[in-house]
Image 1 (cartoon, one colour):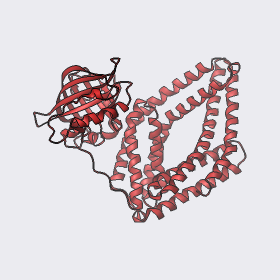
Image 2: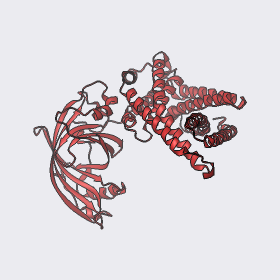
Image 3: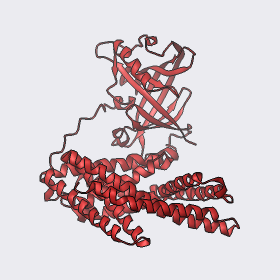
Length: 492
């Protein structure tokens, strides 16, 4: 079974001409009170990737390592600069990537085989930094690294925080490491240095409408791929953010049809809509459960009749298990992988139209205004509709239009500046009110279903009726608040 460890570390190398990397006196950094020698270990790692090094390009490393206290398979997934999640699996007799780890890189490699790309041996001299009470603050390793049969060799220093230590310790240590002749490593990993993959060149800022739209599209495609491992592992908010990325892509395709040919993007948009729907099964459950638990917690005890909390817990677990199983099947399925391949093709060879070469100030601004006009019409229609199911549906349509207007402005913001950013902020406010209203609609539907189950089991449905009434009242508050929130955005 795989386990995950969060790594927060910084890597250093000797400044050119300064000789081998050595540790300076780190007790000068607060709150370090001592350095404890933990001895030397010999590590031997074989790194796996595709032949065209897709994992390395994404900052992901996969290795089979022997030696040390954590021998096994290690998959390192980037979280933020200097922060990675290391997913571990036990050593296997055969040098075959464990299925659990292979699944977590499938969005990167698709059907391409994972093969050995480098063998790296490390002689690691380990020390622990401790505070005045003897508690471990960080581990410092001086690594003598050898690639292959001595093809390349160097020494580097890694400083990794212990559990509970804050990143401010790394900031406190860095000046002393620099004074000792060290600098932040140019390569993000041993494998990157071994294969000569140093920091990537900075992207050239886009100048035309096509460049701005494609930059936004590339960002969302990368988000879908990068969030896939978190969605599989159940990482907090990963499914939601992955779903948002699919929506942003669909929005960009529809909004910027003067830039990207919709004869190509419409079929992709349909597949993205399918994927968003599959991702939403689990996300909608999470939102509903959190909302219902919060509402239940607000009720006086006298209004809670019967095993309501237990009933809600059973409903939540049953739906969660089914949703997780379904999502995993989708992410392992050929339809999803084909969609990722198609998005790669789109990014590599975009179907640009004439508008792509024009000024972003004209093309993007016109598209944003068109989406805003669509939203305005839907809001006015919803406000003019009598309360009830028809208004609920109209408000939901307005919510979707608000998202599209927001995403359009997000894509245009690098070109249009503060006006677009102001519109994004206003659309978030409108979307919040409409989103809360829709959540209330979904919550009432769930309460009806749970109440029916309770009645079937001979339990009281009284509390579900109370919760239903409160949700109905909350939806009414949202409807009354909308004209004011919308008025603040008019003229954006």
